[in-house]
Length: 173
Image 1: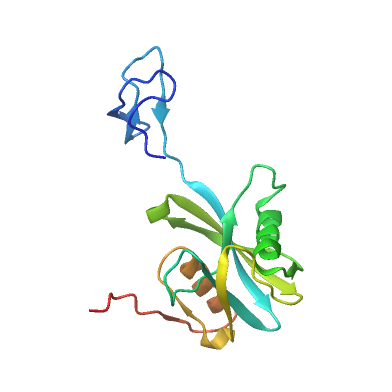
Image 2: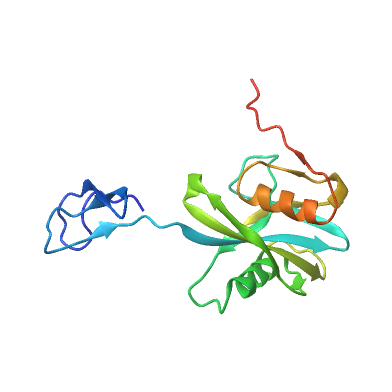
């Protein structure tokens, strides 16, 4: 959230150094509000279904971009592993058999920390409301995008003995 005024006392916020970084803070020392701008936790799933990887395209994304299944870690989720299995069910209607932690990745553009998992799943793919399309790819043919969830895909592919290639992200034109 982009703050311009203090949410506690409504004074205009000013930049100051707090915790070794420049942050927006209330100038009223009795108020004490500091906007720490901590990253939002997001879970991501490399869904393995019938020996292939499922990539999906969100309805809000331009074609032809596909990515991993992702979702916010909800305060009611018992754990990130259970959150990622919930997301696989919500977005693909697949039954997660397990959630194996791959790693955590920064996604600075969205101020998120991605907690990535490999999720073997069974069932028939049925797209949830947020998704426009999906594709199923052989792991040996998968390419990764060089940021956040793409780096998780790269790391998982390497752990499986593959030598993944990066997608060309150079703007056309």
